Length: 338
View: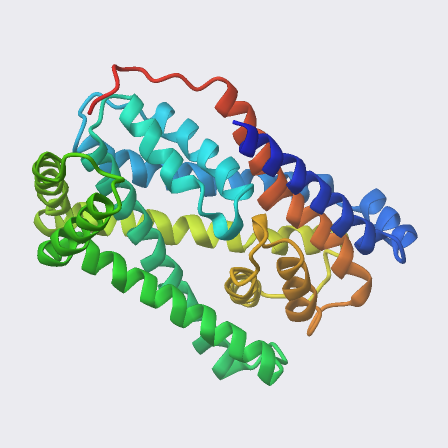
């Protein structure tokens, strides 16, 4: 809990620093843009970020329902919001998945099944990310709407490759029983050698039970291809909803702006691919720089900072704030399952 508070304070401090540098030389223009903006279109951006959360929660709900029939969508939506909070306050967004496993366990799902649910859910997200990444690369290749430097292009390609590797690794972990057995038993043996694990044989027996449960639940998508497709499509549509948000913000400032939705989606995808390299909660600093560089290559300078501030609040800080509130109300609905 102390580390959570510390990380939250750090995120707020980073937000203040980043916003200060964005505003300090352009505050009159930013205030003007905000005053004349179409508030309905900005609100539409907020609606779309909640569509993103809702569709991600729907995919998680469908997977979880295969393990626990009485699970409710409302609980999965709350857990999705809470995951946004933990992703937002941890480097490389690493805090959300462990917290989701904990929350699923608190609602009566075993640790093995909960781990598999989150792996499957994250796998669907990665596949959707890769799909839209391919679309963005091809779209820019044919239409060349972004003037990308060699350095930025290298970061985009690296981000795309890393996400592809992560997706393939998740598939391997989900279905390679021998590899998982080998790694897990090796860790136990090392732990026993250094006196970190007292009863090696008993621990291995417990592990074998957990792994058996894990691999049985991993067969879910293999046996239910329709479920796989539905969860994948929910994640694709969720990401499109997330990526299109800058479009509404730009139009809220200038309704005559010549900008297309495919261009905005592609730019947003590139921004997040680059931002993933920054080892600061929320990719702060890197995300903002990537946004200015990529969108600034074909949009008026007078709108970039204003859009960035609103977009960053809607897509990042709002999720952290609402997720924090949802966390304060979280209670397991069932007895914790071992």
